[in-house]
Length: 111
Image (cartoon, rainbow, N blue to C red):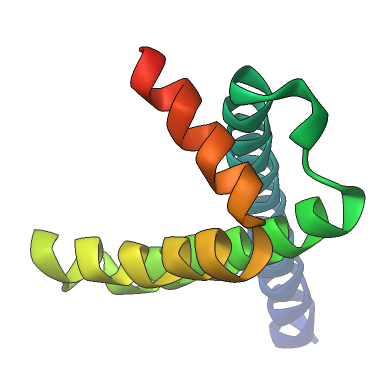
């Protein structure tokens, strides 16, 4: 009986920890998406991300952050850089329009 009780508490602790990590990753993904949106708006206010684009970027960012967390234990700096490059390429080539990419580039060049 004690073993079952112990296992139940252990399982509850693990699931709570995992859930907290997932929320943290999701918050980070949302913050990164907002950063991209602000960069685009700084270049051209009319080209802000649509809700659909935001959802897609958040999804890609969550995949990237989760994969990076798994990769980071054994990967070199170059492997991490290539990993990130793959995901950012998805965002910039598949989600953003050409005009949005140009607006973002324009705002980054002002800095």
